Length: 492
Image (cartoon, rainbow, N blue to C red; front, side):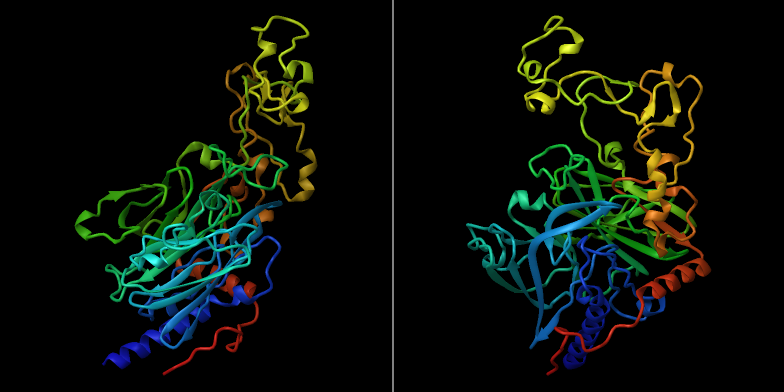
């Protein structure tokens, strides 16, 4: 009986790893992670004991068997990643992406993870929430020496837990550069009630000023918020059939807690970073707070057809490329470039030191680099004509669908206007720039209202679901070959 179970475990593991592998061995895109379009079909998923977890926009990490050990390879390295159309940033991650590839194993597996450090500084790998020997914990200075640049460390342990876990660098600022990945431990006995769809989403945040490509990892304020390394509307919607039971695994490793809200459905929290929760603790809700260093599993029945938003409900986390402005906002035409050196140093040319035009520069620099408190525009629209865009008229040819924004006639007389004119709205739609099978059939202009930590859960009738699955298969191209390098499996 034991041999039969071992055989089934190895067979299922081989199927899961082969299903995950094609994108990893494909040519790496310049943007880093690329778009992982390899998903198991509905019939294939429900016929298997193990329900493979999908991580949209993030690849799965393949493995090979070495005796009775599942062996994985991770490379810590700098990556260039397109988090939004045309916005390529310099991050640090694993195997070419941030977050790194998803690892999936079964409860009871013995695993070996070979970690190579291709970073310009030392690193280490922590297995968050794992109950493993101390020497495998990955805490630099206490359980191991840091892995030097060009160095390698081999982690090996047996997993007796189940649930949603993750791996990450244990160097604090490296975490803020993107170094995290999901680690899913499937239970020996499938969860009940059984889910038909299972997704993992890693939430991350970066402070990246305009015209800069490197995050400020020491900042406390963030302006690019991502699901699985993409900011809306570049995030890939979660596609489910009407009537499916759906599990969402939400993982957070950043500086902010995130209240994740789902439209149109009521869910229950079924698990944390400590594993499955007793059913007696489940309670209904539609928003779950995913704190720093936590994971939360939520489940619901997709009983309400439609395209439903899934997003962090912090208002600033539903925007892209915000940056603080010092001083009152106004409808002035254009923005000041900064102060001259004399005023930046506090030497006034006119007026008194307490006048509005001579506010503090906050010590952010001299000359054009200083940021004095003075009126700043928060709109790309001309103050004389609120429907006339002064900065973005040339973007139509780049894929932007420049619709006419909706404003009342007395806009300039209303204090606080505008608020959404630049961050969202029909003038910012870019449906064509983020076109993919999962977006097929969305309302025209949908992308103008999606930004930051936002995506869709699309609850579709069978015919539309099958149509999108067919579009995926066509985009995937030729079927993979079974003799790919590194995927040889030894059988006893």
